[in-house]
Amino acid sequence: MYQNQIEVAAQIIKGGGLVAFPTETVYGLGANALNPFAVAKIFELKERPSFDPLIVHIADFNDLHILADNPSENVIALAKKFWPGPLTIVLSKSKMVPDIVTSGLSTVGIRMPHNEIAIKLITEVQCPIAAPSANKFGKLSPVNAEHVKKQLPGVDYVLDGGDTTVGIESTIVSVEGNVCKVLRPGIITAGDIEKALPGIFTFIDEKPEKSIAPGLLKSHYSPTKPLYIMRNGEIQIPGFSGVILHGNNSFLSNGQKICYTSKDYNYHEIAANLFSALHTMEEDENVKQIFIEAVNCVGLGIAIMDRINKAAFQYHQKN
Ligand code: TXA
Ligand code: MG
Image 1 (tube, rainbow, N blue to C red):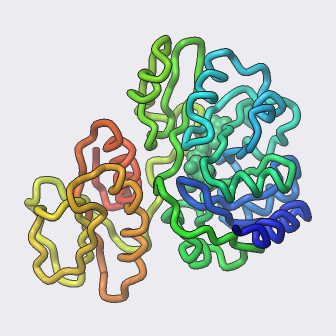
Image 2 (image 1 turned 30 degrees about the vertical axis):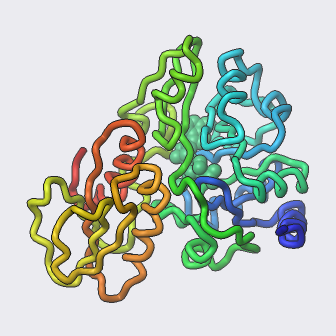
């Protein structure tokens, strides 16, 4: 399945072009990670500032040793446990990785996606693929091919693999000795990492934008319309609003456009449907502003609230 499309996409990447492709998290905008000219096109098409480094996607564990400079035993253990999967590990880069990929940093973010099409594509091109999420910088992440085409009509090719399953971007970590720092929360939680690797102490960096992850800005993932967060149901919702809820028993509908991410506050479902719901509201002409219900900031709820807070940041919501 998808073999023809994968071959077309692989030829484009080999020729220095850009291909949007599915991963388990969100769609990526991919180029040959070892070709600086191709990687430069990603920044151009996304209108992404050059200080925001890209994640490199691999399909073979050996590439970890080629792209990273002496990964530690803990890094290897982490990769073996969670790859293929939604975990990006930031580690010291080797000379193989062009500076443009890492925005001049001495570290590189690497992950092996858990998606058959992505793995086949990387295998077919025979090189690692650098890919940020396939959206304009700061806008909503794409979880299907239509979302990509809406924001990036100039992309050379979109490999359409349907809806992604996880729905939010990978967890990003850096590892020093026995300490694992979460730079961006995701579906793999700090608790999951500690459970899988008992010798490792994990914590969430509350201010990654001030440390080594220049792209982890406070404002991100924003819809083109005002977005407000509802906490405790005390809010007055005006006409022409879109309301995103995570369970059936919450908030009165009041004739507004309602979109459910889950029937019963299932956090995996909420993550999977979060960006889709925001895209739906963004596209609806009758929706002038969007209201979204908050979730509890525990476990996977931390990653969900991270995305919601960043999407709503310019409308002055706080944690
Ligand atoms: O799930 C994902 O991670 C998706 C799919 C396509 O793999 N990719 C993704 O890429 O979300 P992007 O570029 O939208 O977000 C990557 C984040 C950026 O905020 C960037 O700053 C951070 O990763 N990052 C990349 N390399 C880094 C590094 N060496 N040190 C710190 N942060 C890094
Ligand atoms: Mg992104």
